[in-house]
Amino acid sequence: MLIDKLKDYDVILASGSPRRRQLLSAMQIPFRVVKKEVDEIFPENLSPEEAAAFLCRLKSDAFHDFPWKKNTLVITADTVVAKGDKILGKPSGARQAVEMLRALSDNRHKVITGVCLRTENKISVFTVATAVWFAPLSDDEIDFYIHNFQPFDKAGAYGIQEWIGHVAIQKINGSYFNVMGLPTHELYRRLNEFIA
Image 1: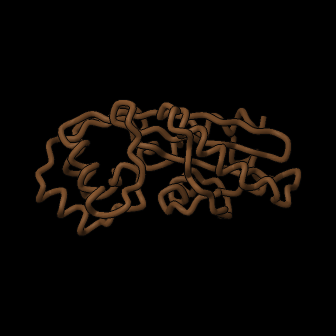
Image 2: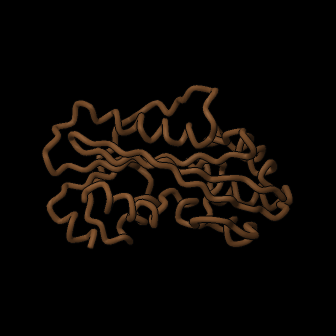
């Protein structure tokens, strides 16, 4: 089992996201958090999938001066929300959050998470996409959500695990946990292969 394989590893989750910490803990993977500050800027010509892969690799590259040991394993991730080819990042404030949620209302969008696995001499990057359908949202509902949940640290200005996910998401096609920020099933499979 993966849990047994990881016993000899120092697993590092390089993320400040409480949702990613929660999901990795639920997978019964022991880890510690080490976060490096990175300017999350990517070339404008990238597709949403390429941007997610670029950003998780960028976060991983920030560990170039880390005191690597043979058993160190760093996991980085980045989630982007895309409506068509347009990437919706983290909103800069309430006004931008309103614009994003109006765009998502009564529409389908994609959530793509890029994950990078790195040891001292090996690296693997993969992405997972989930399609999400929103019901129509009134301005009052959008204002209620933004006022009460302050989704300014979330790509696309929403968290699926919050109120808005319960009342506004009609269906998803793909991994629910990917929309939360970590594609747990694919991560489990890739980790098994990575440290085999």
